[in-house]
Image 1 (cartoon, rainbow, N blue to C red):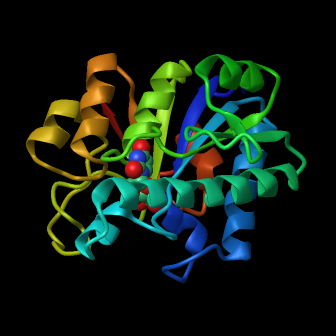
Image 2: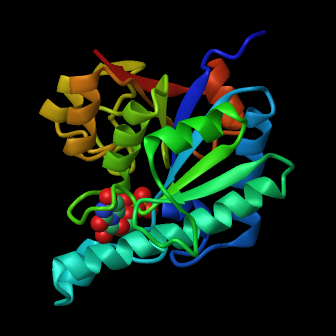
Length: 237
Ligand code: UDP
């Protein structure tokens, strides 16, 4: 069966790499994430990844401690590059070509991100791993995911979370919360459902980019999400 999507943008949060820890990279979790990605890439789906950095440093936390916000966010962006290098290398070790790009210029570390070059790499069969977020403070890697998906003409953004989709309230706190199969951009923004930040949803809405929210720990994995066997919520018009 032909894959449902030709090109996807996958958001990998820092916490997905930290595993049971709150800080750093746990090799078994890194390998498991890389294997899921490589398995899907081997089916012919083109994959661009935006990596988060919450397992290393979050700008908001630094700013709360008194570091100026621009400096703190720059530290956060550098954290995402550490994850990008680790994930890209782990994907290569699964037998799939992968290339890291940085939104923050660091020529001896990774090529600077341009949509043109990243697209060419996708067409050549590389999984591209995008570090540095948008390259600007005051943004998040969720917004970077939507932005890059639009720039790279991806079919969809895949956002893995702790739960299997978007709920009417936080299911970790409210047992009466119900899961949506589909929800509109305006509903997630209007009801402040906070699966991604508002800027990410607004950008997706204005450019018609669908987002699929799924559970990172679903046994069916990323392949299951793409084939529709894993439960998820589609955010679109
Ligand atoms: N960040 C930024 N600009 C961006 C993306 C990220 O300044 O475009 C910084 C910000 O400080 C953020 C940190 O990098 O807290 C890590 O990213 P994020 O919190 O999105 O990571 P995740 O929660 O997905 O692991």
